[in-house]
Length: 87
Image (cartoon, rainbow, N blue to C red; front, side, top):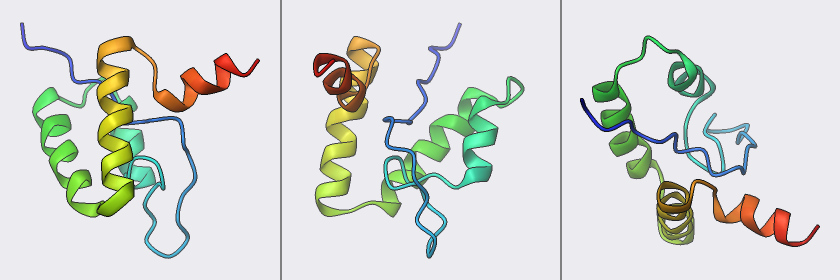
């Protein structure tokens, strides 16, 4: 069985009105819907991850990679971890 690909959402969910990309994960609203759709296959998700990485650069790319890696390893994004810590 193929390994399930974790959603790239890093809990910073706000869409740029100019590009239509999420500030946190660089996905479009349509891509977000496809990630939630149970019929979307893992191959599409793998390819979409590559696409969204090309939309980012500089600090956005670096912080996304760090938070996404943390989410894959710990089950929670760094943003959510810090929110919970502050409560």
